[in-house]
Length: 415
Image (tube, rainbow, N blue to C red; front, side):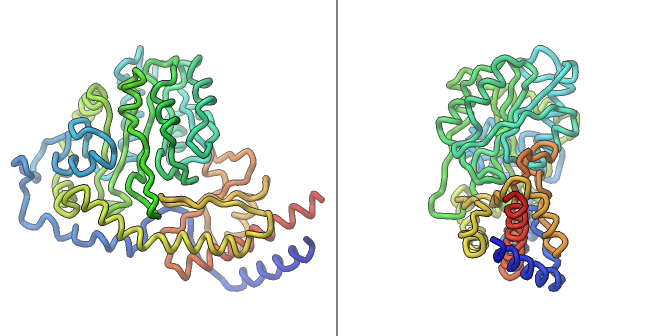
């Protein structure tokens, strides 16, 4: 082990001397991925009329263009009449749903959330930092729930929601979860739909961000949460969110909301006070560009051709550099945008700090947990999508060096 530490120290000194400047902080599409949607910038040309005759240049149409909703109803598992096409941000829709629930109440609620003493959300961990940031913004308590290889631990969920009416929701990324890559099993989806909750307005915030973002031929399908909740006696429970942000242009896409008819009417009723309608010109160009569900699948195959080599590279480098050390484990996702690296307890923050000192910037350790507090200090989220292969290999090789250095230092200090 001493020899391993000596070698890691020498490798790290060389790494620092190289003066790198590499960034793996966020899961952004690469420029090459964005180039796949370049034709959007010349659409809709001189056309401005939707299939139903709507003049897309004008006000109105809160529900969004039907032809675009028809394209995404299948991938999102939402009937077209219960799917809303909105602005460019699904995160914005989640924000608005929280605000409307806080200030206006929900179907089935006994009062507005803001009038209640405590509001809490269940947060599967490791999870998505922007979900946690929304809770922090609105002073919503966050209750961690462990993730299993099927999704959130149903026994823990059932216990937490059964007796506490202040537990109003749960965050879910059901397919290729951020950051673990886990996809929810049918059992978990059915369980979330049927679990008895003390709060009559308990909601599942179903962030289906990676609905069509496959990395392999094994294309995972997740059960229909709307159907599961209806069968479980709770048709108003799910809020389904999705977007084209990692399909077309990340800053100029279209976001979707799907739910029961009552919830759709609730959302649109509140949204009507906020806006006179979405950007229907952008929705029209997306419908013309993608054409149909088969067009979405073909487009995502082009994304996969760009992304798969990056995830293969991460797997190869981690295996080569860390596979025989006992110092790390990592996920090998079938889709999505992230790899989760787990290092020895008490080491993640120091690994991230050493990497930053060597010019490799990572997502902060702890970002995968509410309020940035990973009690084990062991989880690091790797976002390999944006850099080119050359930069990515340098970054992952350097990260592995930092893991070896910190891991061997801790092992010797506690021996």
